[in-house]
Length: 219
Image 1 (cartoon, rainbow, N blue to C red):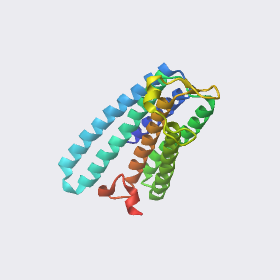
Image 2: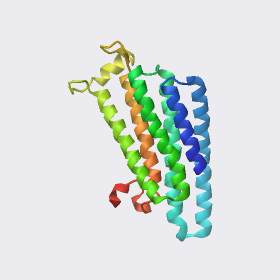
Image 3: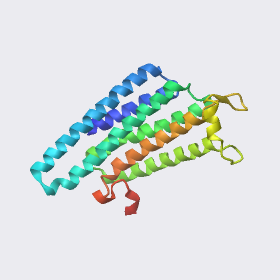
């Protein structure tokens, strides 16, 4: 499982680098696709091991097995989302410089969360898990705020998303920089979901099985 987390972090880092134009997109896509395939295979192997373990050891270990089933899916999903980010990068150019810089900073925060996640899980660090949950929530909020900015103009009126799709994703703003309303909305959505999956995994350290993914219910 820890290998899955390390590979998921690597996949997200490579995908973000591709999205902001720091690496060759085709090469990044191949790397992330390989990591995502490894994540799929690892999740299936984890399921098999857990089923065998549960059948041998019986009911006492069922909660632990179900927990790992759940967070195994979360880890696999992170790699899926990284592949989605790479596919966005494959279809559109990097965003405008000011947006690109902000996206890179936000991406670094996501990768940092993933980097600490494996350590928290390995050490069953409850304090570290609680801190990580707060950090992941902060990232989610940042992604949501940027998503709101994408779909609303400066006056607060909603952008006609259908029109944006209809004219393509390379409209030009008043400052002459290209706009990518659809691609940026998807990018922020993917990053927010990556943070959410990391939060779910961290919650396994601090909440019982029935409250997994919902650590706020313990507050």
